[in-house]
Length: 143
Image (cartoon, rainbow, N blue to C red):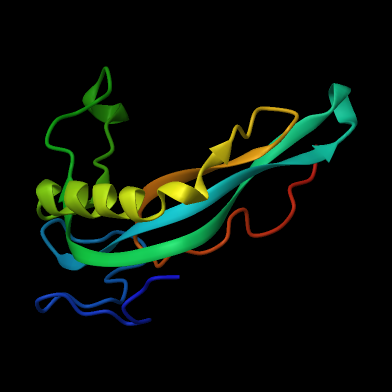
């Protein structure tokens, strides 16, 4: 797996989480461009059979990120509005460049179709607050 380090630093950005509950808008933090190999697995016979996707990490690239808040309400009334803060890339161009580079580098990890009986693997890029890790964390259970 391609990665820089557990506690990455990119131009003064720290690799640790700033605030667990509510990050401050405008605060800087590392954002990871993570690449996964996605495969489909049989979950069980319940309700006629069900399947789930699983991701295996292939690469993690740190880029500068910043916490940003929604600037307008997304609800009908002000009482329903709750500001949402999310970690976004400082430069969308950096994110797109890394995404395209990783997709090109790992193009041969993709084969077949995860929706086919014959199987296959897909590749997926995500922007996340942490380095790439297997998902789901455990085998899902039907409920």
